[in-house]
Length: 455
Length: 175
Image (cartoon, rainbow over all chains, first blue to last red; front, top):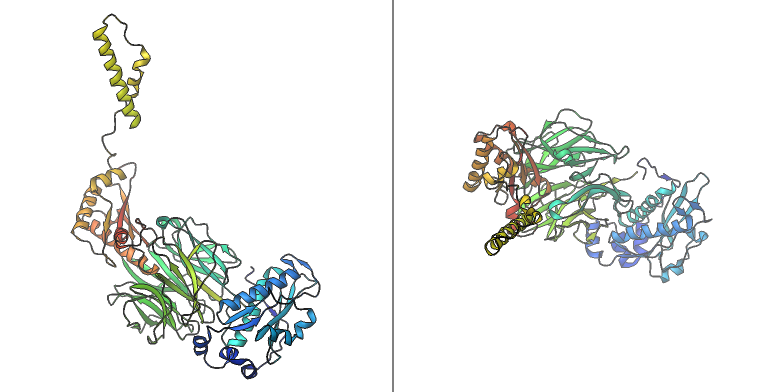
């Protein structure tokens, strides 16, 4: 998909402040989601009772052929993508598009409310797909409160036919943000390491896909081991570590050109890269003679600046969303623990004090939490406050590690390795520890890096 | 090897037959040439050992190319040092041979930490070899973290084999 794609909002109409209407009219299940209370409370109480929402196939005013298929078929697929997004959030039970009545074009803006009430749906996502003379598609997206018989929100998108799935994700994001109060995340992508082959000689390839697993593409051919890919904030570059020519170092992959560039030409191992939120720096680890420290340098190249100088292993750095601080792991105190420092390396202080070892910290894009891997008996993913308190474990697989945040800081992806076979796959979990789901990948997968929201 | 054994058996059988025949029927003609043909195939002598200075020779002389480590550790015990002493002695004999020391970890560590830990292990072995007189310029290191286990299980026995540093010699023609 074209990275430079821009989504054009054709309606600026926004219906505001209808949360109270929804709350009053929607019943208990809806209230639990639509409430202005913090979502954490709602989700803990309401996740087992997700909101029924109707997602009928989107009609087309005139069935037209496009390079991505005809508009009637696209309308059904749009609804399928939206329903799947909403279902995977764990907050909704979609009805349709299969098994519910098709919607005629006039009903897109004037829903047959009695019918939708009878389906048990509390909300309705409707819309249409129209082929334009210039080869683009216009996709309308409407959200209704079925009980209150109100329109809650609408938006429209003009996209090339090949980008129809992005319009579907944008529509699902509209529904999700309007009904939960959380930020959007469906229109985003992931990079990860696709794995295959025997445990002693896994073939590892850099791969990219939409967050729902669609539009999967391999970026490297598997000749060299690749590890820990992470998106740059502008979504144009992926930083990762490659064993190219058996010299493991950090590379920068440019998505527009498909070219990879060695970050720093020197003989030592460099790894664990991450780009600063302003896109100017890469923070990474370098191992010199058995000692690993954290460095940073301009993405464009230049001299690395050393940020840590302990004789221990300092690695897995991750920026705070404002770029002012870096969380990392260090065994300087005897075992792997989490530390926070200012972005220039000053004011280093330990924040993890629970039992076990702590590793791979990642700062939430909302800034309020740090996800990590804890090793203590098992390997599990958890979250804590940047100050170190409020620790909560989220997963309980045999070996769960390598968390990465969704763009809205609400969902965490990680990889789970099976005992024995060593086969790994990608999972997501809500930050409250519920709604664990496997992310579909064509082969095995590890080291997921969830990218920013697309524009 | 099998071919060689068959050839030898054929030869012995042929000679035995000849001898037997000679005793009982001295006037009989010698056996036809094709019966002794296998003799010609026995001629290449078996090599007596690996080529000096080769990878195989290194393994034979040093006993092993691998030292093992405890969980989350990179210090060398007496057995590791004895192994590395033998490796260093061998490398002293072949000054044109260089070596890459691979550091490896078991699967029960996180990705990035294991890369760093593998680097520690490779350097522990390298530093010991250097202290024993192998020029540091002949030694390079690489960490594979947990990416290349040698034992495939998910149990203590497998993990113990995977926590290792492996000396891989690069034999040049002019050792």
